[in-house]
Length: 425
Ligand code: PMP
Image (cartoon, rainbow, N blue to C red; front, side, top):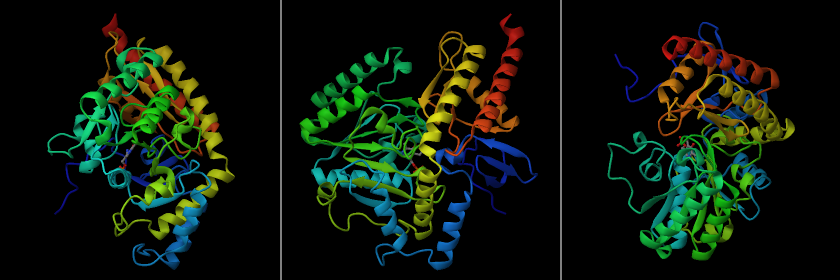
């Protein structure tokens, strides 16, 4: 008899049978409000009829049109359509399957195009679990520990995280840029540095948005030294933050953009985008893969873009994000110790639990996440200590479901406060 490996850590014991929009149902028919969206993947909701239809139709025609052997129409159409949403100038795309693979593809591109070895990533960033991607990841040691040596040539520099440092956003940004200059001066010389790799909003690292000044500082240094700015939009991109790309909030100008998760509403698909001038500096045949740009995934991605446009999902993410944010702030003010806070953008919101002394409180966060699932609300945690509970519903979520989730969350925090009462007194 075989079992699923114990290496998999499971956030809830729910055994799902089906999903519809922002709801999932288990085998007993119990309904859950899903504010995890498959870790920010099912942008159009579970099983959006137009995505299902597009995938069904493509499945009947061609499933695996291996893209280094033959070419297929869904891929060519997707490239054309993505041209309409990508930042100006990023006019070439390359496709793989997962976020980590796309991160690796961007590293290959950056190293070949610059003929430089080093990459600078930022504290709290998450870029994936494959060895090269893990080398850039510092959201938690669990993603790095026990399988060293990691890839050489990576240096880490502070991310402007005001909550971690206990500073204002301006102070945190000034510090981060100052430390970046110090790193370029002392550890990773600009002439050895191929790229900066950054998330517009730390995802696994705790839902911390960057700042306009930080992005301006990265751009200026990148231009000055011929370093590439790679923006990892795997979690923050594709409408989630209430703008199409997370870096749109900060007037960012990436040289390379990485996208995955929301791109195909749940089918494995990821991509890197860059200018043709940059892509042409990499070596032909240096990228590829058996499963990249699967035809069914590309068809689903085309339907995803149609739905995002026709249902104005980016605007919806901004509006429902405001509703969610306001409700979470109320509940935190009412129930949690003073230093607890809400952070994030659009439908990418996190509640950071801090104890009465202001220290990160992962035990309270995971207890709340667990109780929420018992009350029928699926949530995940994130942050270096697991002290942040994150809310990432599908972009189709409506007013009523956000209100329902907020009411459940308020009850979860209220029950916990009531249980704590005797101990406090
Ligand atoms: N980058 C970011 C910002 C992510 O959030 C993730 C996944 N959480 C990845 C990369 C890695 O993606 P995948 O799990 O598909 O490899």
